[in-house]
Image 1 (cartoon, rainbow, N blue to C red):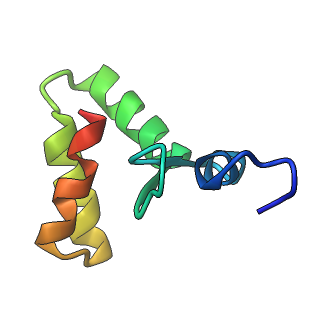
Image 2: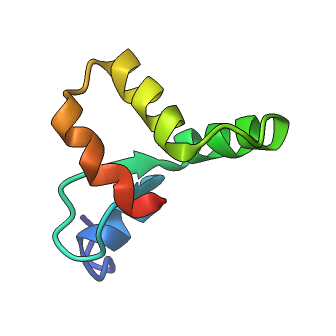
Length: 74
């Protein structure tokens, strides 16, 4: 964190991450991942964010219980 950051969320955003909660975030999503979802969703509107995140998290080996942390984004 830098001195001018107003909190953890501001520091994450400056680094290209979007926190799942504004205060005391435990998880964050990269802006690049969100851009990939946007482009895929434009090509295939049936693609839900839940399906995209499940696939992305499975590819990264993230446990199933952590998927709930991303439900705030929907």
